[in-house]
Image 1: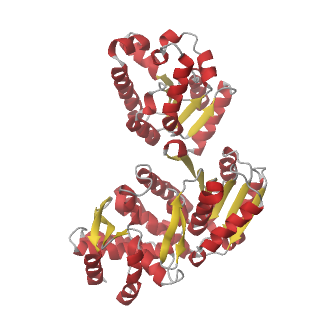
Image 2: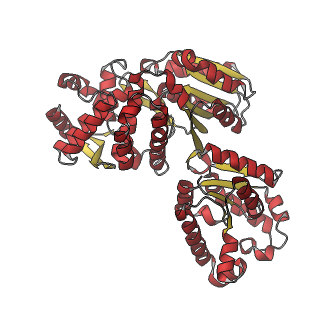
Image 3: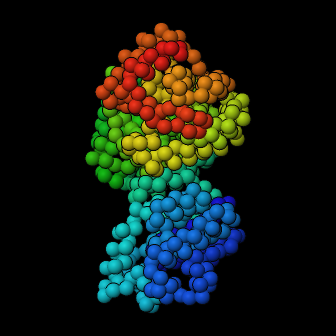
Length: 525
């Protein structure tokens, strides 16, 4: 298991609950404040007064860094301000399960009768100071895999909750107070039930499509029924050609007819089209309500369900109208993939190859090593790849939520891919197939420009073919699709922001003149 890091304000019970949690998990317990006092031979308050807060934080960060780097399974209770520092917090999120304990300000002060040992609460009004610090630290505390209120929960209850989280081993998208977890599991419908329950909604609107309802509707409905809330189902027509404003309106109509309030929750149970449509509908309903993603295709699991991009297509191009609206949770249950065709599975793997080429050489090598098993849908092979691909996307999204910088790397293959989709009326190519073609065509073009190693282009084309994806298309079809490039969201005047792979797992975005891109594309197809 990973280490467990207990964070939260002073007085939340980290030192009290920590030993019980460690005993429940069968691992050692470390209190960083106690370790610092033992090593220094002085109390924290004295160190703070003598050396100042900055020196204390440096000492604290060094100790926590050592504990995380060792990778030894244990429970580590850290000081209330330790993970406020973004760099250390990200290290903890990557290396451990981070649990934030909380309590009301009044309860916190009642647990701290000796305020002389709490230098950060010094002053005439400790309660006001506690409230101020809690408000300042709220975004940092929210970036955790699990948040537990300790006002009315004893140490045994906390230990049980942490043990369940350790078993879940969720991924975390750390976006301050809009952070959310992602569960990757196999045939565990209770994960969806629990994710929806954690949202404490007033009612539910479940959005799916006719294909998903026929193939996986019973499993999804069973998970939703166990939540115990009133719910309305919206069944859309499947396919990219139905990714329209009319489909969004169908969700709005059903929700408003059900008289939902602002504490209602939309559950998107389907592929990328359903997720994008339901997410956009949620973003606009009552000026924004929450939603949960339950992706049912490989492509939506590794790509569209993560990161908050929502929207629908326009006759001039794909995804031209939309909004950023992060989900409250994502549950990727690989059991849904059992009903996918080999073609649909392969389409999802195209997005895995894309993100690996752009950002993660290790993932690219893993996909190459397991390509035959992945192509035939082996769940044991797929599970770690799905998790690694999602993790790679999280690392991009957390640093650039709204695609003003590095997130544009995830558009590799999408400029030409979207053009091929649009030209084909959204039914000639699946999205992943178009991305596979676009990836090869764009990389051949950037190789012609002198940016991408030609051998990497051929390596990528061979991998995509091994996964059952197309890697070449007639030049005439690319020529006919080219007008759609002019409507691409990444265009700015006569240039376009193009992801360029410079070596396996490394890339950057460069503004390229459309004329230069066109010349390079048609030189290579």
